[in-house]
Length: 265
Image 1 (tube, rainbow, N blue to C red):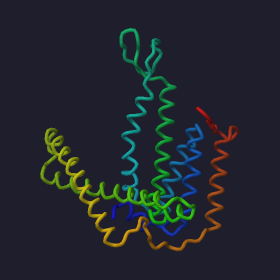
Image 2 (cartoon, one colour):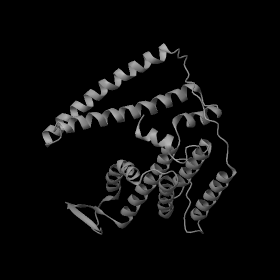
Image 3 (spheres, rainbow, N blue to C red):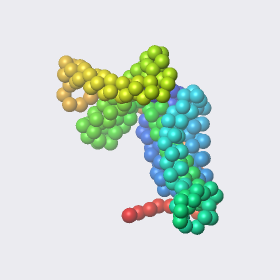
Image 4 (cartoon, one colour):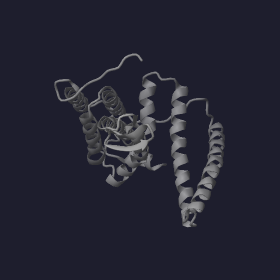
C-alpha cells in the first residue's frame, strides 16, 4: 500500500460520502477553469489546504512535499509563458538579440502567475480527493452512475500500478543512494539509467504476477470488492452549496472577480 493509499484510508474524512467529496472537487475545478481572477485561485488553494491539513489530518510536511512535485514544472512553464520577444525594448528584464529583444513584461508575468496558480489550485483539489477517498469508494460512486465496468477496472489498475511504480522507484533510489550511486554527476546519470531500465523490467514482472493471481482467483472481467455503506449528510451538502455560492459571489463581475466562460474555439 502506497503512502497516498495509507492516508486515504486513515484520514478523518475517510467516512464522508465519496459522492460529496467528488462533487465538491469537480464543482471547484469548474470554477477554477471558468474564472480568470487570481484571488479565487489563491482562495481555493488556501481553503483546500486548510481542509486537508486541519480537517482531514494530513501532515503539513507531507502535503508540502506533494505540492513541490508539480511546482518545478509550473515554474518552468511559467517562465516560458512570461518571456516575450519584441522589437520594442520596453521590458522589465531584457536581453538584446540583435534586432529583437527577449525579456519579461508586466503583463507576461501576470499571465504566468495566473496560469501557475490556477494549475496549483487544481492540483490541490485533486490531492484532496486522492488523500481523502480510497479508490474503491470512488469507483463505487462511478459504478452507481452506470460507468462501464471495463473503464472502472482500467482506472483501478492504472491507479494501483502508479502506486506500485512509485514505491518501487523510491526503494530502488534509496538502495542506490546507500551505495553512493548519486555521489557525483557521472554516477548520478549512470544510476538513473539503471533505475529506469530496471524499473521497466520490475513493473513488467509485477504485471505478469498480477495477471496470474487474478486468473487463479477466477477473474471474470470485473473487480468485485466490498463497499462500505455511506450516507449523504445534509450538513455537508449545505456546506458545499454555501461554498459554491461564495465562489460564485467572488467570481461575479461586481463581487471583486471576473468569470469567463469560453465556448467554441
